[in-house]
Length: 86
Image 1: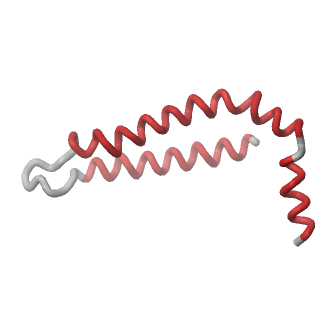
Image 2: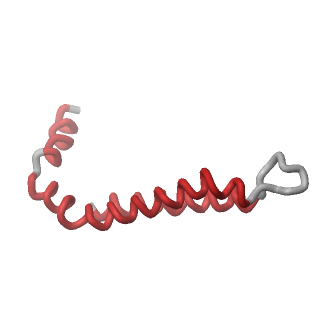
Image 3: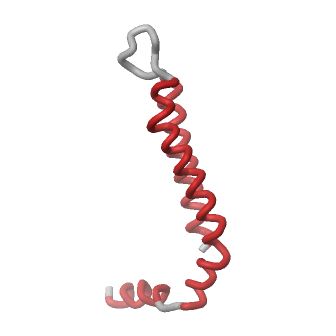
């Protein structure tokens, strides 16, 4: 148990690893996070008005739920991929 704490702090004070993350990965991650944010805000605020079902006007088209599910899946895969690169 105590050994696990030492492992957690090893990365925190490993300046080479921190520099590698900041220099090599952060520029790409920053651009992609902006992209994922734009997609999220589109799905949250704009898409419900575009994909509203016009017959009853009380529910959304199933395509909206599929798009949001695809967003969740793809952003999750992207995050796992980035963690594996570190």
